[in-house]
Image 1 (cartoon, rainbow over the protein chains, first blue to last red):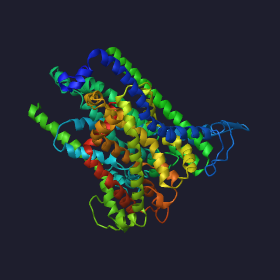
Image 2 (spheres, rainbow over the protein chains, first blue to last red; image 1 turned 180 degrees about the vertical axis):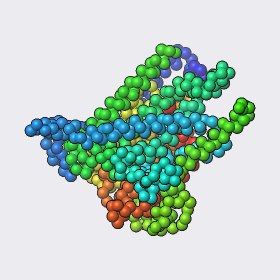
Image 3 (spheres, rainbow over the protein chains, first blue to last red; image 1 turned 90 degrees about the vertical axis):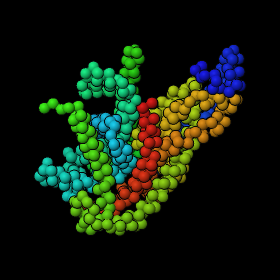
Image 4 (cartoon, chains in turn yellow, brown; image 1 turned 180 degrees about the horizontal axis):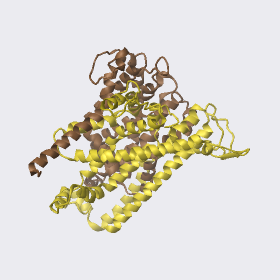
Length: 331
Length: 281
């Protein structure tokens, strides 16, 4: 407020800003505004609790029951049996299911591969878009296309391109001579995860690139000029100027993408029909719940998904805060 | 061989243009390929050729009519519009309070909203299923409006809050000094200039709702209430191993074109909306 030039304020404002009464009036105004703020936030908070908080609590509740999907009203409490149970020297529950651990492995592998590839290609693309050249608008429009295409359509399009007999990918690879016989991208367990990763990277690199580009554009250009005068190479300029300055934005974009990749479901469900080699933890939980009608087991798996994602998010936030603190002390 | 400065600049330009060309081709090719396939029928489908060979529109007619994708388009449009409308309405006031008023608990609310926008949808699936059944919304598009609010609302609040924060303080101060109440400030001062941000936020939320798959797959069982992603995901041929690729690609093109057109029209806004949520957050 104090920075406002007086001339810009109406006369009544200048009078109201006279020091002693204003200070008193401001405090009560502040208090009134704070009270009103709660009223303004209330509808959103109530709605959010109804559609997110409450269902989450009920999922937790159901994870301790043996409810079935068609009759959710009839249930018995079974304690932790849906998570892990021992009977007759055998173990049961989600945590004893090899498929669950397969799904955990798949999800982590998918997340690590696709997010690191996205970061790499996203960075290259952002650096390209940061250059000035003719037809830049066209390229920007082109890179928005993958982002705009619905995930299910992406899955179908790539499913067709990966088709073992008539797919374009095999055709191109054969023509170039990289492979001698067509590959069964979708059916082959070792290849199917790569098919999923490739489709996901294609779809999400634009998002990453736009995030990084926004950060790149905020770097003042005189920094580069100074570095150039000092004889820094292109790699040194990137390593010493670009990277540190876009780091905060990069971490945020990374968190967004990791959270998104960890809950992957639709791409895998449609592209590889939830096959064992590619099933994700979300896919596993939904399969228990809907395909096998086991609401209790499915809920337990959902809770585990939630805890896993929340744990990874907490790690990220902790790292982020840590790096922020480091920055503050340096300043 | 030593290159002159000019030659080096020319070389750099060449690589930039080459990279731009390759990037654009990779981005657009899968969709181009889908269009090619959608225009082919019968044996032509299995021709791997990179230029259009035939122009058969039957696939489109078939996809929209017989396969009910036309009906699904309407459902998707309805669900996405109503969801976004509700979310925007509730978010405007919340975003104003969160962006412009300092009050205790503000940070916690913002943090909670951010967390909700990131959590996996499957975590609320069974609880939401119970709620949907309890409200008698199972197998109706009402169930989708309810469940889409789970992820749309935190998103709209978050993005609108970052937009509101970027508006100049003077705007509000003048109104406060003139004795305007909060309600008047929101409706008379902020609402009129929020137009562009509302369009951007609404558009992004609309795309999110349009693309949603898991809830739509779980809560809708009848063909006529399906949304577009499920309708496309469920397109089956005569046998399980004989997918009608021509129809699938035609349907895919039909549902993607409106979104691509919207995105290209609002390009600049969308980019600013996408990055506003993250870079400043």
